[in-house]
Image 1 (cartoon, helix red, strand yellow):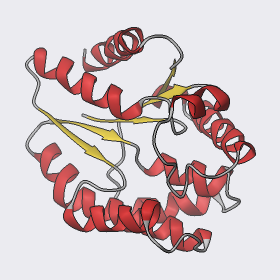
Image 2: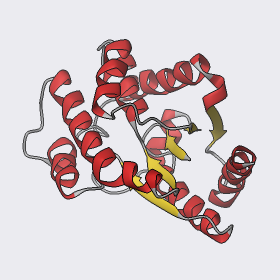
Image 3: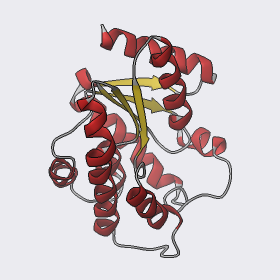
Image 4: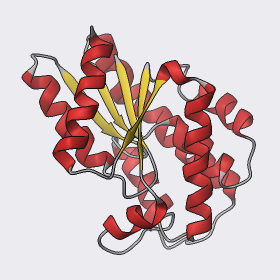
Length: 201
């Protein structure tokens, strides 16, 4: 099974992926986790360019395609082999982020991004996505450290991102669960674990 967690920056995706992996391993499941972009040697270099590189501005299509390139390598090197071994794969973001960040919020066509993403991933898509939802102001308040190139965008952009995630979840509700990310970490994790438990059954 391939599961992804997504949401605006600051909703706690990375923490929840880590905790969910621990829970699943406690249930006797073999789990591979990955972060998108990143997760491979090449992907880490692309991530650095996208989020922390000296090139602070780039065209939106360039940005989208760099994310896609990192993801293609992640599928070939990590996700595909893990699924072939029968493991559960947990991804901290995936194609949905492109569709929302560069599509709904950035102005590119979400349908075009889905089409390019299908090619980049060779059709390897999550069976289910947990969407962590949090108001933009609350998510921004949770972030620590220096904002990266994407995190530095204004609140209006992230409001569009949040709406985009909601719209995408509404398009295919059978493949999404929206979880309120505002409670304590353990409470959010319990909600996610219950959703995943039901999916595994």
